[in-house]
Length: 407
Image 1 (cartoon, rainbow, N blue to C red):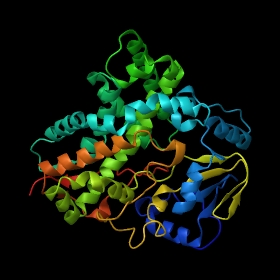
Image 2: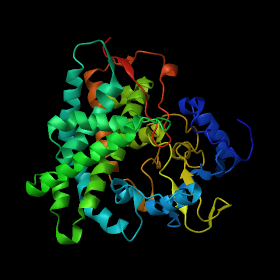
Image 3: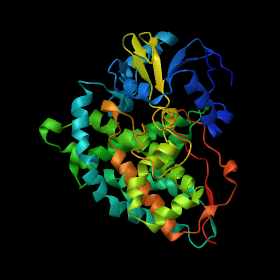
Image 4: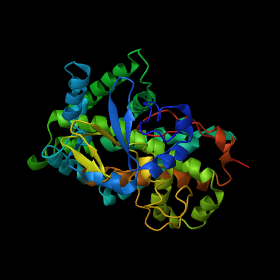
């Protein structure tokens, strides 16, 4: 990589970068905390790569997540009047105060650390069921067979989705995560429409026949915490897309990390009390989120000495901040379970900190612990250099994880 000031539009989308982004990101961090990213169509974004500047940017209200602000910017750039679809326009990640505040308050009850821990037995049962399905075969592919379905089934159960619909939810989640932006077949729109239609029907059923689940609780909440039907639909849609994507990426990444770090894995298996304490370092090292959801500046903003004009796109490169030597001195490229307070940004920072962070940690810990307790001799079936990552600008999921389960 050269030291030029402006990066190519495709620097994050090249296959070389996707498979091994960290040398490039180290180079970019050395040159400065913010880099302008130019696009061939004349557009641009500003990429924040260092930890302190990223943390400040994520907490700055002048960097807006309001989806309507984003669509106004896209409308100006394209010359076409664009509006966000309803399933995206009303969920937490795409709103700013004052609309963000009551919605966050209304759903936060479902994702407290205590409630996440209360779900642990259910997650363990789901993990065990999936491991049972692997059967007696000596080899398994753990992305499609384990890492992907585990969070989908967990969140589906949390929302009160009947078991006979879980295969559809897995299909929709996988299709939305692996969709190629160059695919002109309309498959993305079809999957979005199918998921939205199912969620609308499920919400209607929960209105008539409430159960002991998250959707029922949101629908029948106290008046001060009650959401509109559109907000409930958006919340359910967000959980079944963004929640699954990030957690599946995290589960696969953590399992792969422990497969390639047998000494650390042995320490965890020898002392089960270390699992919970080690999760933040594993999450920092894996960085399941490549880049935080983009922001738009509502006025000129200084980030790391760089003045970003109003109406500009800002992207926080989370996987870069999680390897910043300024925050993680020594060897941030190493997995170190003794690292003190690895305060990563994988779940964001500020008012948009991930509501489901505690649940994601529980799902990830359970998935890895149950796998290696059952198959302590598990090892990669291929050389680590042959593991391939999907091209995705938000999450960094493995395409496949072939594993030999038995000696």
